[in-house]
Length: 347
Image 1 (cartoon, rainbow, N blue to C red):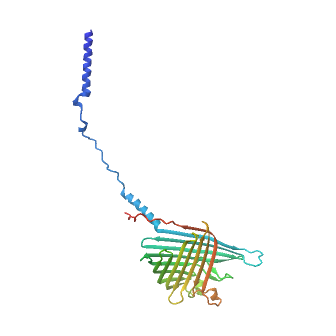
Image 2: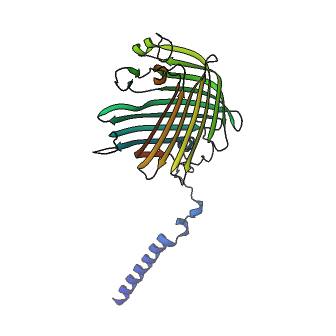
Image 3: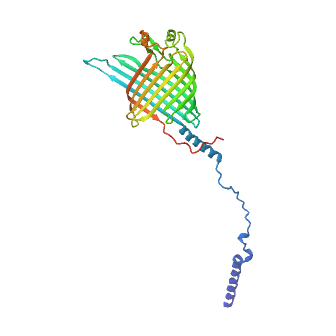
């Protein structure tokens, strides 16, 4: 019996060894991995591709934005100024007085390498009340647009369009019944082409236009019939004139608290005495919202009947001065550096 069990155990061990060799140690079932052929094909996408068109458009818009900031400059000056004087049982006498003046000045410059355009709007309106009687003390607006092309370092060829008039009616005191002026009576529209000189610091500008055109408007029927500002009965009077303008402007004076503006304009029709208009302004800035303003204007025009002429005198010279203190607001765009390179054209 023991002999039979030994034979069976030996047979089982021999069978198990052969089965293990057949599964793990037979060389015929082993293949070299390096010799296998990869039958799985994966599509090669290559490196990441950047959409050049979108990138170019975005970069171009960025450069254009930098260029606009660098080339455009805007300055706004506005304010509401008041003066007031009151007397009560004052032995020396005097008139109660209150004056209010509102002004707005907007200036824009676009500067390219060989071209620039300068636009200015300047206007003011004032009222004064003396012993209960209210009259207009100041009323004007002026719009000028001057494109220029550079010829040399200090010289440019320029065109200029200038339009100026007033907002509301004016009457002759003390009765305040006779109309003296109204909107577009008078009104002036001047167009010219000439040469412009700028000094190195851009504070002085001289503009000379020997062949210019001016339109004088007197659109009020009553004033046109009187011939108060030109020829009787004519509402529109065209003229060929010589137009000249000298402008001086300087800011950041007295520790940045004061700026000055001076301008002289002449209009000559080659036949009569030139019409001359001079202006001098001082702006003071004490705090962000408090300031003062002094404005003086002089006009010589022998075609305008001044109060002196109406009274039998001989003076055509006109002069006005306003001084005010009150609330002011100034805004100036900061200076931006030039873009790193010229923007590319859009595709």
